[in-house]
Amino acid sequence: MTKVLIKGLGLIGSSLARAIRIQHPDVQILGDDLNSASLDYAMQNQVIDQVVAKWDQVAEMDVIILAGPVSQIIKDIQDLSHQSLKPGVLITDVGSTKQTVMKAAQAFKDQTVNFIGGHPMAGSHKTGVWAGRANLFENAFYFQIPLNAASAQQLTKLQDLLAATNAKWLQVTAPQHDKIVAQISHVPHVIASALVNQTEATFQGDPLGMRLAAGGFKSITRIASADPTMWSAILLNNPTMIKEQLHQFQAELTTVEKWIEQGDQAAIFDFFKQAKVSRDQLGPDKVGAVPGQYDLFVNIADQVGALADVTRRVSQAGLNLVNLHILEIREEIDGILQLTFSTANDREQARQVLRDYEIITKGE
Image (cartoon, rainbow, N blue to C red; front, side, top):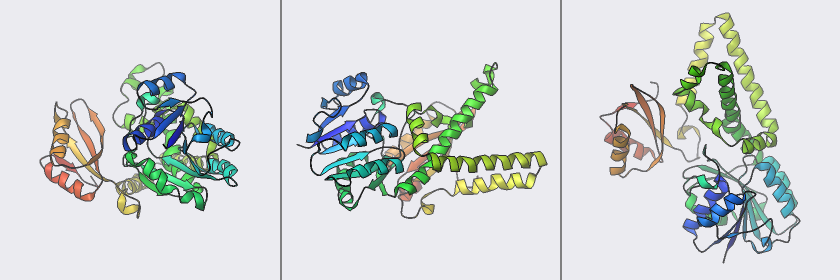
């Protein structure tokens, strides 16, 4: 019987456990977590089969998944390098930064250990084992970084174990990974959190402002609700990339401030125009061989049943809806519904079944 240890049963770890359970019900899943309430919940809801303390039974494990914050993952790797492990054991992690993790994993280079750095690009504003779900990673990009050639031969094994996640596997280098996530994930989290904090300070003593913070403000700051413990660890484990890109962002803001002071309408217009053109072009045609997603934007009225009608039509047409997002909806004002499909053909079929709705195309 294959034995899998998941150390860290938060949102990510418990979701992986649930996915393994679906595809491989014969696998024995053992769990370890600092939070005893998480362990109790995991056992009571059959997320795991057995609780283990620290590295008990670690020598029997076929697969070990390290699913804590990055700082804890590095400590776990250091601890594991001094443990008696099963020859050929596969160890992986889910950390949001990879250079520090892969550097720590060098401790395994002279051992019969297969290490694959991992990072599923999925999450939720909810945290903990209670929020985990097997489909959390569906159609999400899942980065994989093998430690060496021997570990690379185990990629298929890991992908099979996690097949029920329905993730999109991508192999990259650790520096490439950290540069990508710093720009598209880490820096945006810092910006969103700073904007929320600055907005709260601006409206201190004036609760009306925060009450009215809806629509676009809520959309661009949604990620500020993420777990502060996890994000503290991320910033401290990808400092070079994050600092560099924060400096570039600050320089951009300084430039905009200068244009405002100078009343440079042309420069400000070009600033927004460039951003609009770049944002409108985001999609599979810009990312080469990376699997893409196809968006359809639908104008829906603020009335009972409008959303249900859209999803009913898509479902009856047998179309695979990857994601659904209400970009903005306010009382008495139409909302924008973003429907995401896995193929261009599904998107075009959806366009037909929703033809009596207003479809918003690029450039509008």
